[in-house]
Image 1: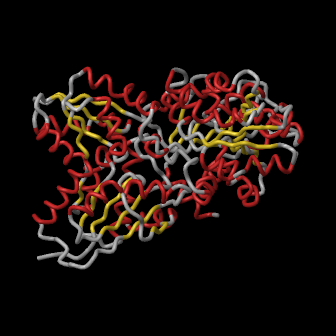
Image 2 (image 1 turned 180 degrees about the vertical axis):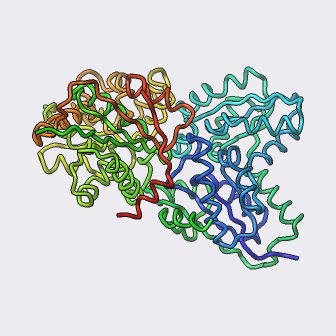
Image 3 (image 1 turned 90 degrees about the vertical axis):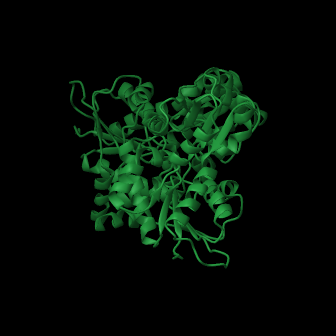
Length: 276
Length: 276
C-alpha cells in the first residue's frame, strides 16, 4: 500500500518552516502542502479559545488540499488545540509536543527537564501533562520567553542584547539544574547557539522539529501511506498574508528558497466554515 | 447642538488605551466605546492589504455601536488604511498620524524630525507624506523598532536590556541630529524615559495619544457634537480575545481599572462583512 497525496503542515506563521525543513530531509519523496497563518500570527499570546478557532480554519483549509495527514508545526496549537482538532476531524493529526517529550525522556539523566515556549504554551501546562503520564518522576521547569520570537524574526541571533535576554529567561532554569531543555517554539532553534552558551554544554537541547519529522516517518510507515514516487516532490506554500520581509525571514527558517508562495484570502477561509 | 452618542476608538490591541486615557482627561463628559482586536494583534508586521481588511471590520463593529465619530488609535491603521476607511464609510474618522505631525512641526527648531514605529508604519512612509505636504523643508529620519512592542508588553520598561535595544534603534537617529521624535506606535510612550535617556534632553518627544485627544476635542467643538451630559460617562470596552495577561497589561496602558470588558466573537464580526 502507498499514498501519493501530500502531507499538510501548518503553523501560526513561518516558524513551522523549521519542521518542513526537517521533513524534507527525512522523507524526501513526500510532497508537502504548507499553510502559515501570517495574517493572524502570533498565536502564542492569545487565549485557548481563539487559538482553537484559528486552528480549526487552518485544518479545514489543508483538508481541502486533499492531504493524507496533518502535522501541527505550532507548539501553541499542539498545546491548547490538538485534542479538540483530533476529536473534531477524526483524521491523522500529529503535534510537535509529544515528539519533544519522548526525545527529552531519552536524553535526560537527572530527570530535571526544562521547557521554554510562548505564554500560551507554558500556561497550558501541556508538557507537564505529557511528562506526568509517561514518567511521573520527571520534574519539569518551564519558562515563557516572549522576546525570543521577535529576536529571531529581527535576525538578532547573537550579540550582547540576545545574550542578556537569554540569561534573564534561562538563569532560573539553570539554577534548577536541568540537564535537558525542550525548545518549545518553532522560532527557538534559530537561537540555539546563544541558548547553549548560556546553559553550558551539560544541557541537551531538544529541537522538536527534528523529533517531529521522525514521528512523521514512523507514522507513514506504520499506516503504510508512504509516497511511492521517486521523482522530486513538488511542494506548495500558502500563507494568509505576505508581509514585507516574508521571503527573507521565511527562507532563513526553511533553509532554502521557496519555489512559489500563494496567498489565501482570509474571507474565503471564513466562508469555508459554513460547510462544517 | 449636541450629540450624546459615544465616540468609538479602536486599535489592533490594547495599545490604543493610551489614547483612551488622554481622551478621558481632555473630554471627560464623552462616553467611549473601545474595540481592541486582541485576537489578531499585532497589525504592524502585516501587509497593507490585510491591515485594511481588518480595519474595515473594526470600523463596522463600532458603527453598530451607534458611535458619532471614530478614532483610529493605531498608527499602523492610520498609516496604511485611513484613506480607504474614509472613502468607504463617509463618516468622521480621525487617525493618530496627522496630530503627531502637527505637534512635531510646532516643536522642531532645526527641521530634522525622527519617527519611530512598526515595520508597516515605517515602510508606508505615511509620516514623510504628511510632512512633505505641510512643510517640504522638513527632513524626516525614520526607524522601525520591532522589539519595543514586546518589551512594553513584557513590562521591561527600564534596565540594561531595554537601554541597549533603545540605543541600537535610536543611535542612527541621534547621528542625524534630530531635535524632535514622534513616538509613532501606541506602545512607545511606555518606554518614554529610556528613549529620552538615550536621545538626551535636547530632543522633544511627541506622544501622539495626547495630540490626538486634542484633535478629538477640536473636532467635537467644530462639528458641535459634544456630549451635553454632566453625569459621569459610562464606557464600554470590547476585545476580540481576552488572553491571560489582558487585564494587567491593559490597566497599565489605560492608567486605571476597567469597569467591564466584553469579548466579541470573531465569527460574528466576519458575518457582518456580508451586509457591506
